[in-house]
Image (tube, rainbow, N blue to C red):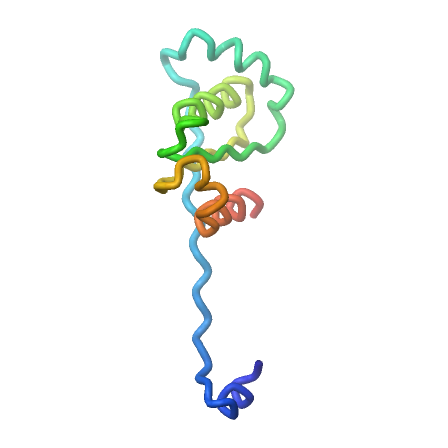
Length: 115
């Protein structure tokens, strides 16, 4: 609605809410110095994704898919030659449901990856 229409209804116009800033993705880094024994095999299996931009979201309180596994996945993709891996680690108290409930941070991470 226009401002005059809102005033005519006895309502005050609201100021637009600033857009949330997306979380900062992890910086590209070299493969771990002492990778877990299974990491090279995982990297070999992920080699077909070496040129595919990839977004990985980890949630600190997620016990179904722990952040340690998400970090390993990001490292394995990087070991496989993928330099376009974005890893975001989110806080949150909702565990795995954070992906459903934390629209601002999850949406910000996706937005940051797509831009």
